[in-house]
Amino acid sequence: MAKKTHSTLEPTPSVVAGFERSLDELEQLVQRMEKGEMSLDESLQAYERGVALYRQCQGALQQAELRVKLLGDLGDPDTASPFAPDAG
Image (tube, rainbow, N blue to C red; front, side):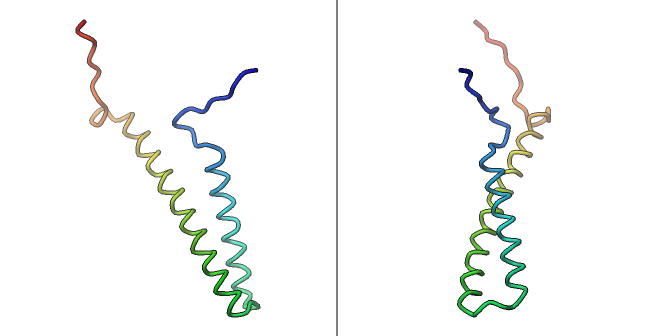
């Protein structure tokens, strides 16, 4: 049976899926809060959950930004390490 491997530069499906799930949940939470039909306690709990989801999304976006920067640096001759053949 062949084993699937991911390139180190490809985002893992779990990271992308986790970001999308968090963003979807955050959007639904905001919509529920905007209706104004929640009690104060429910609103506080929803706000706390929203902050946690926001932080998860921010972390995922920061990781993506670093990956993009890394990919850009790989193609930039000014930041790439020069190739030095073995002397041996």
